[in-house]
Amino acid sequence: MPSMRRQRLQDALVVGNVRAFLRAIRLGEGTSDDLGYRRMVGGGEFTSFVTHPRRRVWIPRYGVWSSAAGAYQIIWPTWSSLVAQYGFEDFRPARQDEAAVALIAEKGALDDVIAGRAREAIELCHEIWASLPGSKAGQRTETLDRVLAEYRDHGGTIAT
Image (tube, rainbow, N blue to C red):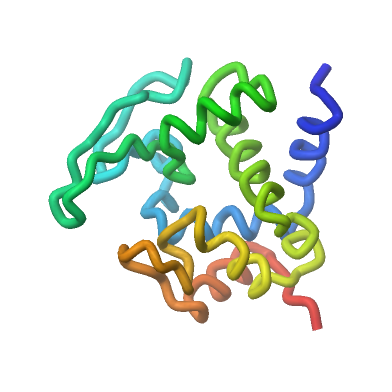
């Protein structure tokens, strides 16, 4: 049986706005397609969901090494920390989704996402996902209009 903290992540995943927000994140991370859960930074793929691939990839455009993997491009140190906190057994898509919700919650944005305050949630989460509007990471970012359109296209509602 999952811990109460982990149960909160799983409960959040049945909320339409949460599912839509996760899809909006995937837009900018380049993982919107069916293979997104297997995607490595730079476009390659990994084959096993037993654990995070822990493979470092050189990104010449930014002059950095990265271990970002999966639908939410989670780096190995972050994944390792999440495993310690939540006990994730593997890197399957369901665990990646739970991990993304955990990161959203850590930024204090989960209540905003659930309530449809997508703009506020993006503002809180752009430090995690460098592709979100407002990120200062120096990588390519999506426009707010494009992220919100993706969110709405996947059933997300905007609070009035």
